Length: 244
Image 1 (cartoon, rainbow, N blue to C red):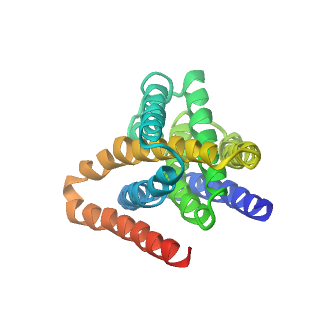
Image 2: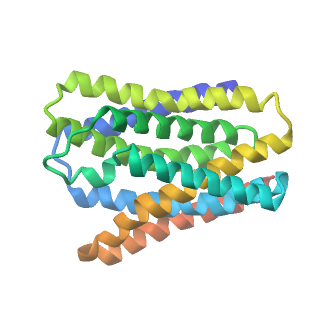
C-alpha cells in the first residue's frame, strides 16, 4: 500500500501541474476541455455506482450507508454553495476574483478527494480506477483554476506553486485516511467508502453533467464523450469483479 500511495501521490501532483500549466504557456481550445469534462462525468458516475456502491453495501447496513452517502453529498453541496468557487464554471468569467473562502473550499474539496483515494486502498484492486476518476476531474479543475489566476494577473511562478500545493492535498488526504482506516475494521472502511461515494455522485451530477448539457453546439460529441467515460467505468468494473 505504501508503494501505491507514493506512486499515486507523485502522479497526482504531476498531473495537476500539467493540467494547470497548459493554459499558461499555450492557447487551448475550449472544446477540448469540455470533451474531457464529458468523459470525466461518465467515468465518475460509473465508478460511483459500479465500484464504490457495491463495496460500500457489502460492509455497511443499507440505511446507515445511504445516510452517509447523503451526508457527504450535502456537505459538498454546502461547501460549493456558500464557500467554494468552482473553476469549471467560473473560468468563463472575466471579472471574478477568488477570495479566501474560495481557497478554503478548494482545499477542503481536494483534501477529501485524497480521502477517497486513501479509502480505496483498503479494497484490493479499487485504487486504480478511483485514482483515474479523481484525476479526470482534477485535471480540468486545475486547468480552469490556472485560467482564473492568470486572468487575475498572478505571476506564473506563484500560479505554479499554488497548483503544486493544490495537487499535494490529494496524497495528504490519502495518507491520513489510509493510516486511520488501516487500524479500523471492515465496517469503518465501509463508512469511508460511503462518504467517498457521496462526493463522487455530487461532483459528477452537479458539477460535470451541467457542463455536458451546456454544449448545445456539440451535443453529439459531448454525448459520445460522456458514454465513453461510462463505458470505461463499466469495463473496469467487469475486470475488477472478474479478477477478484
